[in-house]
Image 1 (cartoon, rainbow over the protein chains, first blue to last red):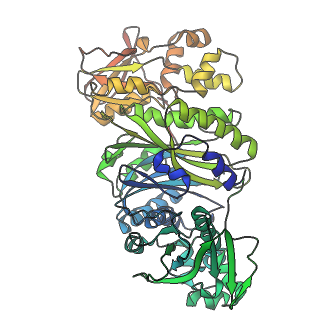
Image 2: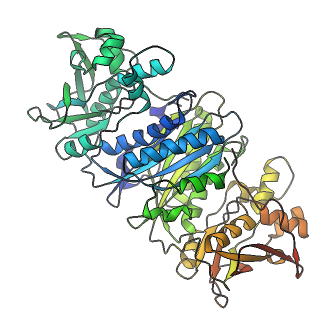
Length: 299
Length: 299
């Protein structure tokens, strides 16, 4: 069963009103914003990634979902598989540093053992407060589509983590993603829709469009690439497409009125219109979207 | 690193006040009670256990932690690893039935894929409300120790699930634990300390005593055994010890004043006194506690 089919089936279960029909990455309850993400060794991180970085990433990816709601972190719960003193100790050191960095204290969790040789599976649940909470589904026809920061750095960093030579800042983008909490709080009261870019710009923008019942057009030429990315992959169409379909960037993607200009560093990359589906432009003309728009889980 | 060492290390991280120093199975925040439990294939359930029963158990074990606080379920988040249409479909059917049975709607979650052949790792986070929330650490010297229901059925059921012949009600106790939500709500306002029996009566009672800074004495002869358990394992000391050190019962263990009598079906199995450690009695005299008091996770 693939992720989309499973999600459709989940929507037939008894749902809490705060689940908003499972159309967002967060739930809301009693004024709190709740999100949970699981990282799997060999899927979301490499067995060779330093445990300190895995701890950072586990917290950061969850806080990125809170950032997309404009929430402030309140606390986190950790579900942790014990796997030997060295890895566990390094993970704890990294987790300690990450909790302090993001001012997100530990609320609780669970500790388990795994069968010998099993890949590590780590879950974190983050709870935030004071969210303006723009939904993923709130984009309006005519809205501009914006994204914070640069896109593609983490995907390039993954290639470096897998053994390629490349700029250290790209490796850091992959291993130490920076959830846009400050930007999220500034944007959330003003935008119509917001989500984080976790699986790829094209697939996540398509999801925002589908949730909003709209079509989205993205201009590949406008996709913001960092200098480090351009040095590593170049800036041609293939490089822009690679950036726009790579995951793990954890930038914020948001829809806002066509005349509104955000107060944070962001780039306008497209717009919404009546209809459905994704249209890609590059160099002023349409280009065929790639078969793979980003990362999707399959069994 | 073993579970106790890891937990000690976690206590040196920045903790939320609602974490209560990680001395309980639940956290409290904004009037809510929050708990999370992970089930691992090959550790907490058997690869041959029906997916519908795994779904039930995943929800039931979490709701048991809410029951120990006297909370009413409000909602749940599911972290699920996709593993093929047949298993996923059966799990969803069982999860649907369990959510409805416990009136606990789905709030959200995350879906991931696992590397081929990896054991399934499932996490659920349950949120409850209106908890009187007696702490694990609240037992007082002189208090009586009580437990609801019968002890040992689930451990015997595990032996049956592994291929032994035995009464179907024991297998059901292992595969379909019944969180004591009604009993928990009735007891919580009146007891001094409460927790669920998940890892074994002796180890969990020892944890309550340690958290309360007290010694606990348990009378093996008083440990409540079901008729089915007696038929399967007998009622001699070995059978009583096996029951008192088996996990997965999800009964409620609570401390209350020596003259107070609970309004729900429960058995007095011991008492608390100044000091520390566990004293076991049987047939009127002391017996040496077994080396293994229950289930503990190790890497």
